[in-house]
Image 1 (spheres, rainbow, N blue to C red):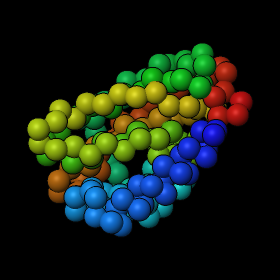
Image 2 (cartoon, rainbow, N blue to C red):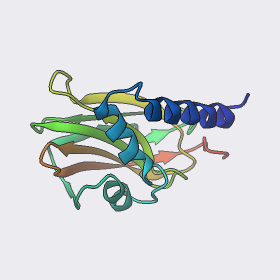
Image 3 (spheres, rainbow, N blue to C red):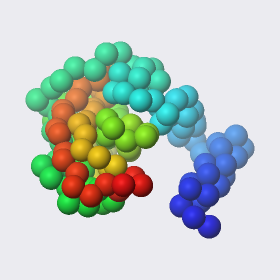
Length: 154
């Protein structure tokens, strides 16, 4: 089974689990919101609109950790942190990837709003770290990452 088939089958299992009530209501709502086009969106504005939020605003309360130059686009380390109060979601977006939304993290009051992961990048692109507050303000930080060897089929 290749990665694409694994992801498709995992999505089907998650959908069945959501429909059967295995997850709590908060997880169901988050899954439904993310499923309404956020992962298919092609820009920052489209992602936040698909998630039901307003216009994003650049903020010094959000920071992004990413290399200036990624030598291998198949494994680019990205991090998002915020000092903003009342954050309920953190997002990582890669502007020129086929799926702009690379990661979505739900944040509870018990969790520090600081996340890191590795993503694939097919080409040099702007990368966004986005924080969504409890009052639905969308704050973001932006950084350009240059890729020397593409990871999305490059």
